[in-house]
Every structure is written in structure tokens, then in C-alpha cells.
Length: 132
Image (cartoon, rainbow, N blue to C red; front, side, top):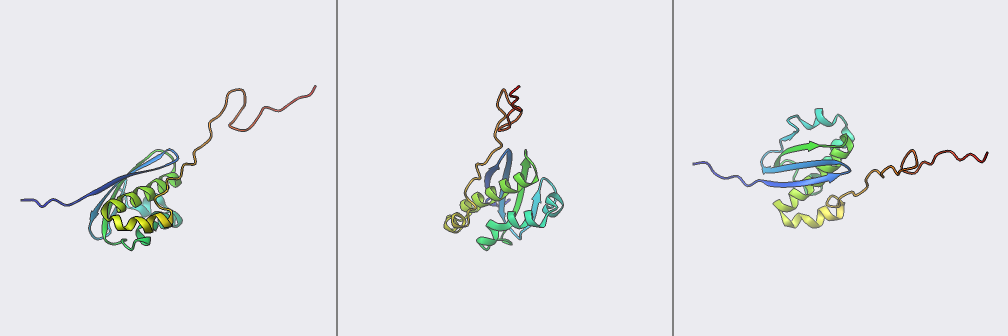
């Protein structure tokens, strides 16, 4: 008879990127879009940014992580993944919420690209004014 392992799932968003994360108690194995995170993100800075909620709560090697990312670019996906990991950690252990909130990991970054308006070439740019 198979034993049921508790999985903590959460969704994180940043710009147009969406991350779905599944945390399972384990040894710290990460899979991001069926790849290891070092080959997917290719940047040490983004990897440290993603690991921030796990390092703040001292749970880096306590959970196995599986993530599905889509939309946006690499930096937006990293922000979405960080947000999703923080939300999943809150589901796993509600006492971690205070630490994650103080470190800013639970706050969704709401900055989006401003839309282009009609009658002008961009969001803020205007066509050149000609007096004569």
C-alpha cells in the first residue's frame, strides 16, 4: 500500500510570467521545466534571487521542488518562481509567514508594462511636434 506524501502547491506571478510550484518534503532536488535550475536560468544572480525564500527560512535542503514556468522572460519567470516558492512555504509551515513577509518574498510585484495608447507611437512617446 502506497503512503500518501503531502504536497504543497502554489502559484506565483510577475509581469506576464506564471509559475506553478509543488513542494514535497525531501532532500533539496529542484526541477524547473524538466531541467535543473542552473541550466534553465544561466545566471548566478537569478539563482540566488530564487533561493531567497528558502534561505530566509532555512529550508533549502528540506524540500524537493518541481516548477512549471510559462510566459514572460527569464527575469520575470525568476520573480514568479520566488513568489510561488514563498507562498508554498507558507502552506507548508504557517509559522514561516512572518519571516517571508519581512523579507518581501510574499509581496507580488505588480509592475507591468504600460500599454501603448492610440494616436502615439508608444506608451509615453509622442509624435514629433512641428510648428510649421
